[in-house]
Image (tube, rainbow, N blue to C red; front, side, top):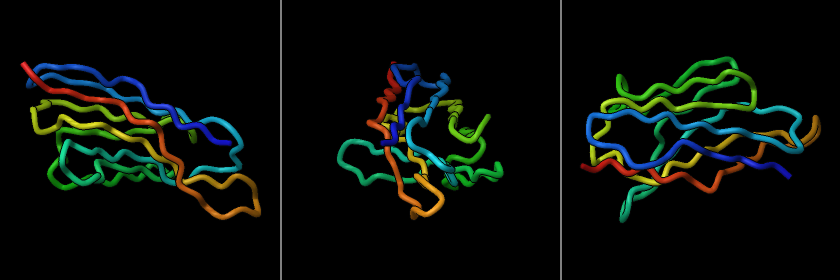
Length: 120
């Protein structure tokens, strides 16, 4: 079993900042890319940012400059979100591309999501 656990969501005023964290534990041989998606009410889930095991980031174009993804080890990833606006309100989901053993294929594991609400 693999657990992906997000933290750091909450209510923030427009213009404020939040930092999300995501930790992965369990039966893990290696983790490749980790990242964040978000889903706002009535909208499809969309990629926010991802980062490879080597540290190469990839962002949704519209979020570049405000959001920063980082990874301090193979199993933990962060999302620093600045200058937040109401359109950033969504549930943010962390995912990890995991090999459970040297012989297993890569599988995507997802967290339960953390709510981010930007409102005055």
